[in-house]
Image (cartoon, rainbow, N blue to C red; front, side, top):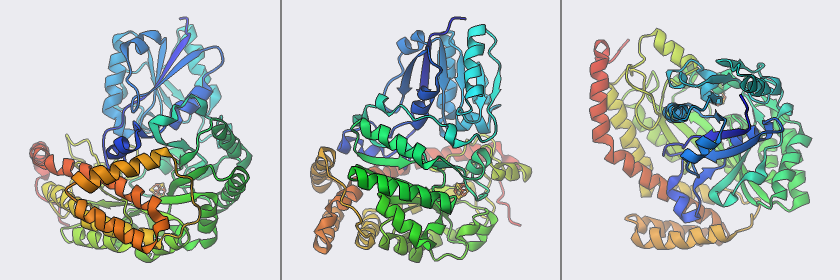
Length: 522
Ligand code: SF4
């Protein structure tokens, strides 16, 4: 088979609290993040092939694109499983072989959604020998059903992503990677199973990536996608120093945010260094206010920590904590919703991402729930929709109603703006990042749309006045928090309006799982 043209596709991500669709019109963008996978795969394609990148979050995949291709590389996460199935069928309809890789294919290569793919690539494509063998086999007509990369290749093998291919106007930020892996073993998480212990790029290698991005003339926000940037303290410390020095030499063209664990709140040296390197926010998995639940899920680093005090410390060092929380854990009952509400209020992280515990493919949790006979038939499992786990101490409907009610409370304008106000007041400003037309446009649209037409305009104006009275230099943070609320408010309303349909779906799930209808109470 003669192979010339390679089409690389990233599926569209559905709307969730994470997608931030509600801010796109304010910023004039089409997606929150650029796709690092596409740019890295493009850099790994062997010489001599033409390639075309389609990120379906910003561009349509046309029939013409598929007809142009000799082979299609498809990546995606668990959340894209249905989209991946449909894309494989669509490309197969044109007789094009689809090779699927990425996190979902790596954790569940035998997933039914991928069964029509010509091949599945398991592991990291930076194992060049394994990745390039796909192209030899395509040419010789001997494509295998399964390709397996070497386990956990060093990140030093990762090429510089082809940033120059991005149209930066379409995204709020550019994604980059410093490390992968995590030293912890949370039961619900597949990341440590895929990536293992923390691996970091060389400092020089990452600085070369910053140089490459700088050369494109992009200036602005960078999302460091690492599972846990501080997975290895020494690695994070060395990298933060190197980034800080690079930022000083280049006049701070980028601001960063990333993901880490709660130990950062006990590591003043690292947190301050990260802030001085331009890190302005970190997402931290808090999960639950219950120590028993934290122990049960293997989140040992959070046990016994006073989260509100920890978050205040981080803000005083210049890092805004954002957090992930889950209801529907094994020990949770009806009283757990009130405890969670109290934690969210006390910790005052404006972006408190509250999901339902889901047994994701490839996790220890999934295996345990299957063993216990509690995996629900007919429930896909979506953290903002419905779990796929039979709860122990409440019915499925009680869990979903409790979750939605709590979301409505924590994303009510009063609660959200109160958290934002406290967060902004406490957050030490380390840098004044330059303000561009995008931010000015968002502020003007916010004043018009949220300040004049939004049903929560009273709370909005109170928030603005309080921030400006307290410290007018925080006007940038103020508008950022206000604009993001457009997404949280819109999405929370969307979830509420979909509740009757969801409850009807739950009835069907409960009927399918009849033997389990009763709540398990040990
Ligand atoms: S700390 Fe985060 S990345 Fe690490 S295992 Fe737990 S959930 Fe996964």
